[in-house]
Amino acid sequence: MAVAGVLVLGLLLVSAVPTGACEGRAQGDGGIPTYDVVLSIRRDGVVGVRETITFDYGDVGGHGFARRVPYRVGERVYDIRDLRTSSSTGAPARARTVTLPHDLQITVGDGKQVVRGRQAYVIEYDLGRAFTPLSGGRWELVWDAVGTTWNSPIANAAVRVESPVARWKASCRAGHGDATVPCQRDRDGPYAMDFLQSGLGPHEGMTVRVRLPRGAVAPEPPRFVRPYWDGTWTGTGLLALTLVLLPWISRAGGLGRSVLIGRILLVTGVLAVLVDAAADVERYGMWAVSLGDLTVAGLALGIAGSAALCGQCAPCDTREE
Picture 1 (cartoon, rainbow, N blue to C red):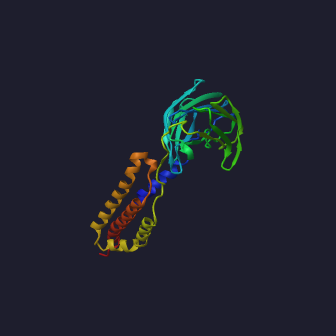
Picture 2: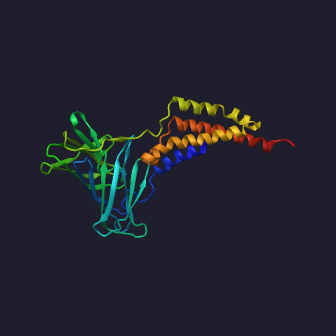
Picture 3: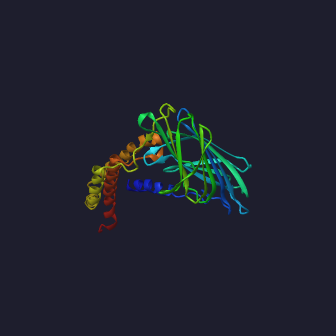
């Protein structure tokens, strides 16, 4: 059971590491010349996203790229659906997706076909549950339209926001972390606004903030999941107590008195972990699993049962004839 817990944590760490050499990188010397994004806000609160990305693969060539779109920020979960990809320059644009702990990784291209020079790709998807309710019935959208996982610089980026109503506010800041600057802004009539930024470095994005008045949209409410670690002092204390008592449990098993008890503890621990995880997995997916008190108690029972069974086996190798 302890092994199962380690495997879960290991998967979280491994999946957080970039999974391919082409991720967020143009495999030539030109980087990303242009990155254009259109955010179309609908009356139902769903945001239609269209990203047009130009890669310069140079003479070296490349197979495509990977774009990470966040679906989980902290305990908040967004909906990303209806994904479509294409290429106006004829490059292979088949999309493959992998759900990571916080991002949906969209890999576009063909690993067997090399493309060279400038290639343009289009990624389209619908973003749901992205609006946050404010006082007075207003709604706010905060979204990094470019993302901060690109390893290549972006020469020129543009984000266009289209509103369903004429009275609204929007702003944009470019950069990463606290090192951000206001984007250049250009209002295009009452329903659209363009934000421009040149010279984005690797891992620098463009975060747009939109505020709509009451009644402008009717979005689905934000959705939240439990944190990855949701154990309290009760569960943590039980696990710590089990670890302290491991030597005694192992010796008791070596006396041949607790084989049945060890098996019962091990099976009970496994069932406790499965029960605790099943609801989260069924509702939100495997990366929404939360380690709560029931999981911690299951780990404690599993460790105790394993120690009892291992203690039973140990004397067999050292017993005098």
